[in-house]
Image (tube, rainbow, N blue to C red; front, side, top):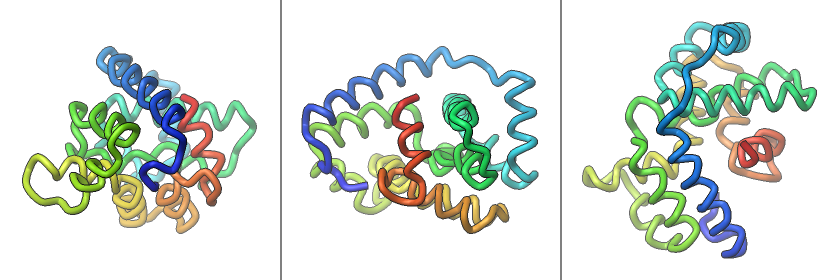
Length: 176
């Protein structure tokens, strides 16, 4: 995703919403048995391993995105699997919770600074920014290694592109 591709007002509004999401995430509720059933029905065992490596907040968000797609009448198994794994590149401790508000704020207000921080893994303080910026690519690679379909992998890889193969996922992801 290109930094600075939207007007500043839209980016600030998105940043404000993401900061709200951060504070909401502190009290994230557990997944329900129905959520676990959805995950089991949608992902193969190795895909579930990738899913459960995500933070509880990312798991909750991904299930919410998947359910929103189902509510809109989307039943493509590749799209639903991608919805559950689209943020998996943030998992495994790669993008801790404390990094997320600065990433959103920098993307909105100082995209050049974010690009500088995320340009390479570098020292410890830049590594989470690098992973946050590239989480779609990392998640796609994890999904491919877990044996998910090439279509699912491509949807995950492009989920920040509003006009690409993941446009539907992108729209729902931005809305929930």
